[in-house]
Length: 262
Image (cartoon, rainbow, N blue to C red; front, side, top):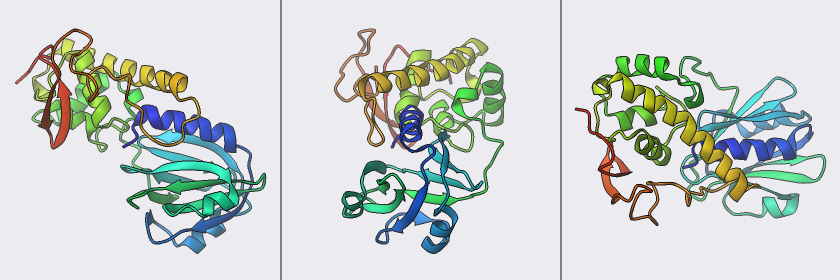
């Protein structure tokens, strides 16, 4: 599933290609995907309007439309975007929706499993912080509300912190040297401070790595540079064996460099 760094780069690339573009048509394909409005209502809301901005919102992308409407797309596990000439886009078998632009470009949302969601003007929970807005003080307050939760589970819970998924939770915890099996409420202040610092540094560094390695990406996941959540690695950069176990129902990568707080 694309996470915060992937979606940050997707948004940047889509904004660069589509901002200011006028939408001429919206097409619904097949029965895959989940829409919160009818295809006809989606088409009426977007057709004739321009794309004002594309930005990341947690683990979704938000298309801000010039007429004030907001289109949110969650790619789920396997969704992604394609940009190409209009006839090529509409012929693809796993397309969910496609949006035609005046300049002859078509953006399509694809998902081979058909799970991606498309939401027009959905209600937003403004009380859940984005991962990049989490500092040590806020993290302490979030932990105080869920002290018995494993720290891995807390990091990936989108109702607590938006944007972090399984892979980057492992990277963050490894950098902070905290075991994913630690109870959130047992972390000492210095561990919470290290964790808060790791959240921003890991996510921002990963986005920069993606810009360098995959500058035009608007689909897919690229994890080849990750330190521990990486099936191609047997050892961490510190030379310790990487263990793979199920933690909080997720395949989790970690090492004995990480301290267990329980």
